[in-house]
Image (cartoon, rainbow, N blue to C red; front, top):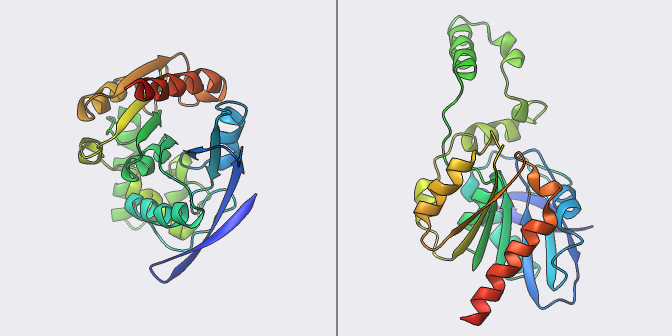
Length: 244
């Protein structure tokens, strides 16, 4: 594990990362999802894609990376742009899971690999909508001390800056960001995923011309057991691009 310091908006971010296959010629950057860390991605892909230099990054505020200010997804992308330049890496391939998929999209890599990516708004179940309504009612009544009973699982235990960040990024509509992406895209989604349902992959595919959807059995974390299969799909796309 290594750490680089990035300055952004008068704040200092310590970015923790790890590089595998350091002598490989081509880079692939891995970005984890909300509430996760680089080791989860390394567990899934560390033994695959041996012809690439793997760069695993803890996003600010997660794993061993620091964050002491509220951020937007655009802020995350800007910080990572600086970091990528700092370690002399390329944006040939960036793989992003869930929230990491949104950050990866903004980084405009040559090949974007979205694994169960967030970014398409999914209608909330009635139970969640009722919970939000009740919380707003209690807030209006001044009973904010009951807030802890209504906080989403992804927001529990967060520092104040990270909770503010969560509120900013959780319900983003990334339609225009996907439409603005100019490179090639491979969309790997789980058929049983309820966080980023399979239909959202096809919605993203409509927005990114020439993108390809590959379906896998499994939920939001299907790649943990099928990292090798995802890796093979990446290799297929890379091979196709070399043939052309």
